[in-house]
Structures are given as C-alpha cells and as structure tokens.
Image (cartoon, rainbow, N blue to C red; front, side, top):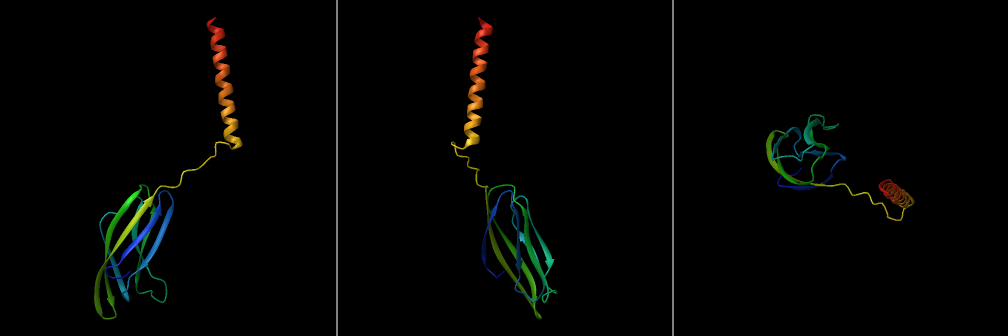
Length: 133
C-alpha cells in the first residue's frame, strides 16, 4: 500500500473474499481503519511471510452480505529502517449482487413444469364444476 493510494476492490455478495495488502515499511506495520467496512468483511493483521517476518500484512476478508459502495481509509504506521513512517491509503470496495440464474423458457424442465401446472389447474376446474352441478 502506498501513501495516498486509492485502491478499487470488487467483491461479489455471498462469495468468500480475501485480499492481502503489504505496507511499505520494513518492520512493525500497524493498520488503523477509519470508516466503515462492508457488512461481513473484516480487517486483520498477520505476520508477513519470510523474508519479511518482522513485518505485518493487512488482510481484508470475509463474505460480504450487503451490496453497495464502501469507501474507507487505512492509516499505516511503520518503521522504515530507523525512521517512523505514517501514511494513509483509501480503499473503495464495490459489493455487487451475484448474477441471476437464467433459465430459458424453452428448457425441457420449464416446459414440463408448465405442462404439469396447466394440467393440474385444468383438472381442478373440471372437478370443481362437476361438484357444483
């Protein structure tokens, strides 16, 4: 993550999501959230893998539960060798709804279902008329 960076992130509602971010410091990155995350997502810090094991990465993860646009800042405090480094990055998360399942009206399953419903309703009407007579 770079100072002043704006990072667009696309997430699909109901799908598991995980994105790892690495600060630019050399040791002891600390991440502070300023704003509101999308419902269902969280920020955590994890120890960076070797050779950066003295540092921490930030992980945005979870399953988003509400569509919409969410903008928040992450302030980063780090050590870059012996100098303290403080900066902020903006994350713009867009949570979209999953695509609707398309079932063509001419599929065999839909045609069979329509035939069964139509036959069942027609038979009910015929029985109802006989009972009333």
